[in-house]
Amino acid sequence: MKVTITKQCMGDRNCNDLCPEVFEYDEDQLKSTIKIDDIPKHLEEIVRRAADECGADAIIIEE
Image (tube, rainbow, N blue to C red; front, side, top):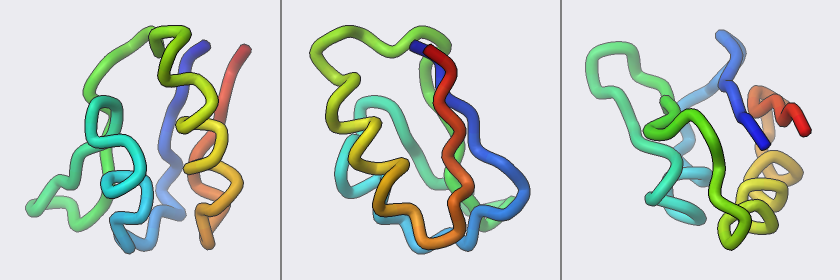
């Protein structure tokens, strides 16, 4: 699984709170970014949850 964040990110940091192993907040860009390219299996479910809960629908998952 791979994940990206679009320009629509509102920077509410919910994904960062849910899964800090994958998401981090960029203070300069005022949006979340991805820390790793390939999501480990044990984090896939929480990344899916972060995408589902994203108010801006800015998290894109590629299986």
